[in-house]
Amino acid sequence: MQFTCQTQALVDAVSNVQRAVSGKTTLAALEGILFEAMEDKLTLTGYDLEMGITTNIGAEIQREGKIVLPAKMLGDLVRKLPGEEVSFSVDGKGNTVIVSDATEFTIMGIDAADYPEIPTVNDGVGLTLPQNLLRSMIRQTLFAVAQTTVRPIQTGVLFEWKDRQLRLVAVDGSRLAMRSEMIEGSGEMKFVVPGKTLGEALKLLSEEDSRMSMAVGRRHVMMDIGGYVVISRLLEGEFLPYQRAIPQNASTVVRVNTRAFIDSVDRAALVTNDRLKAPLVCSFMEDKVQIYCSTSVGRVNDVLPAKIEGKKEEMGFNSRFLLDALRNAEVDEVRVELAGPLQPMKILPTSGENFLFLVLPVRLKNT
Image (cartoon, rainbow, N blue to C red; front, top):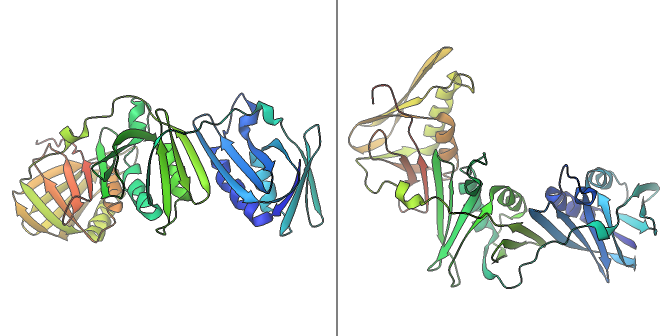
């Protein structure tokens, strides 16, 4: 195999594809990137048996072929090449000579026959939407994905598409994040994508409104994002019936500046840490929210203005969970709905339910 390509194009491709490469595995080929030089393009693939990322870059192909090159070494190497172009030449034993200007490296490749076949989705249901929209939807739900594998299905985000509405939902037992949006097209499907896959897709999604597509099969999802194809297995199992967890009525409605609420909770959390866990006590009364926290290292009392309708309420929360929800609201003001001291707090936009976050309260000693 022999080819020449632009160095920067190769750097970008290797950096992104490398995210799907296994760190440690018994199969050496999976610690590498598969290079395929065919006709006038070079295809790079990373795959860890759960998720794969593939892309094509333009190249001058002198001799077609395939080789697997060690991802970590290659990533470090190509970023330090001096020239605008780089040439690769592979002999029959896998010795790969990499030349850029006066710099020459030789590294040992792995036979491409040892690389597992990446799955495809040929007959799946498809949908398309703007990249910046999916980026926003993933960002506003991914934070609530479970980090433990006690319930594997909760380590992913539920996608529901019905009546032109796309809804993403994440839960971890203590909180819920839901984001809904109307999109073009018709269809109906329901599937759960691993959080890790969406985290990597998030890095590829643009903040522009250029479109991306998804194809969903029985076991895999494929996302075509700006020249990169991400394919991932779907999580199997029954997702939590999340609608039952959402309070339908509110006895207290609070409108508060999001930035002010974040800053107040952030200050109050200074007296807590992983070892000193204490609930953040929020008292919703008249035209203010009083926030209090006390641990063995100190205590804090803070007040912020708010518009409050309904019953006065006092509730305790995990400060990190509350902060995560507020920081992902992405609006200047939020509407907080309460249905009692032991019911989840609902955080929504001031009008509508474009997003909905639930944060479960911590039982206080007097409740």
